[in-house]
Amino acid sequence: MTGRHETPILVTRSSMPPLEEYVEMLKPIWDSCWLTNMGEYHEEFKRQLKGYLGTSGLELFVNGHTALEMSIQALNLTEEPPSDGAQAPWERVARTPGDWKEAGEVITTPFSFSSTTHAIVRNGLKPVFWDINDRDYTMDAGQIEALITERTRAIVPVHVYGNLCDVERIQEIADRHHLKVIYDAAHAFGEALGGTGVANFGDISMFSFHATKVFHSIEGGAAAFRDPGLADRLYQIKNFGITGYESVEYVGANGKMNEFQAAMGLCNLRYLDREIGKRRRLAERYRERLSGVSGIRLCEQRNDVTYNYAYMPVVFDGFRADRDQIFARLAEHNIHARKYFYPCINSYECYRGLFDPEATPVARRIASQVLTLPLYAELPLETVDEICDLILA
Ligand code: T4K
Image (cartoon, rainbow, N blue to C red; front, side, top):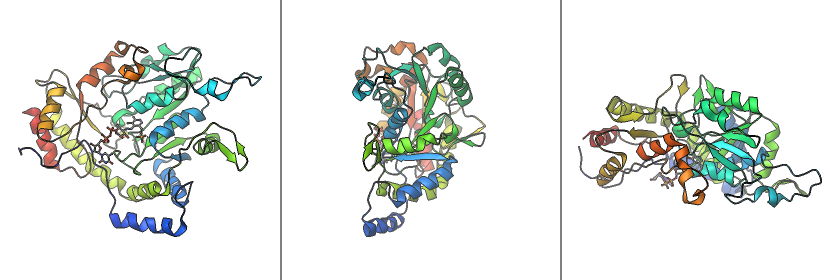
């Protein structure tokens, strides 16, 4: 076992394409002076992503959060204005947390990154939290129905760490109650269930192409959908709601991906399968070393899922050292795991007093026990061994 690393080992490290390839991609941008607003790379990136994800509908965004927030807006889940048109747009969308008397409700998970719930709240909708299961930390689909009221509009589940939700059960419940399903698939780019690409579930799936993701475009995101009617609406909402030179139909915003992002995405897409292959080997090594150890739990993996090995979460439950002790031990060696996703969203300061974190006990417990270990394509296998040695010491 080595001593303290001179350069920190972080939880992830952005995959970088060969510099010359990216520089080559920049030349046409200089020649054309077309930097943003749905340029040629934007359109090409969109075309290639549709192919990779196996989806007919896809819109690009400046980041994953904006893709999610605008997807929720596009599905029009806020209250409809009365037929006399008396309700102004700000009465429909500008609610502050807690001002949810008349708001539509969205069932979601507290075990995620802040973005998932913020996207709901920033649409003037009230999040209703349901617990996760103890096997892979996705929403416990079997119990969702108990939360449905006449105000429920949608379900926003998260394929957390790239673990796919129980998509069939969720769809069946949504269909029965006429609810929309918007997947936060930020962690699940390129995955498949029984050969069906993850972009094909629910009404919309949001992907994040942030620098920390398996696949990135520096910052970036996408919404994949099946209803062709959503294509124009998403495109227009991300472009200020503009529907023509002289018409603005939606209270949109600026969610456009620029040409530099799209160029990075196009470069990275060429190497993605190779990157996932490298991650897979490292994740398998972690599993070989840590599975079966008393007090250590790894996410249950399904045989019918093609994974992208986005994260390496490990739960310390009755192990001889607790999560925080392992975190500190690794940090002493300049190895920086992360506590994704602690704390649970329903105990954030900005939502304090609005939710009962005890109502989602599994999420609360897992959040206090989980550590996400370093995992990225260029991580040396010896470092994985070293991390495991330190954990098991
Ligand atoms: N939904 C879910 C479930 C999500 O997890 C996320 C984002 C979203 C929605 C929203 O998608 P985006 O709008 O972000 O596209 C990071 C990411 O910023 C965030 O994208 C991600 N989830 C979240 C789980 O992790 P931080 O605050 O932990 O990132 P940071 O800056 O501490 O970086 C983590 C590590 O990554 C660093 O230690 C080193 C490495 N890194 C970081 C950056 C910024 C790089 O190698 N290169 C870089 O450029 O949030």
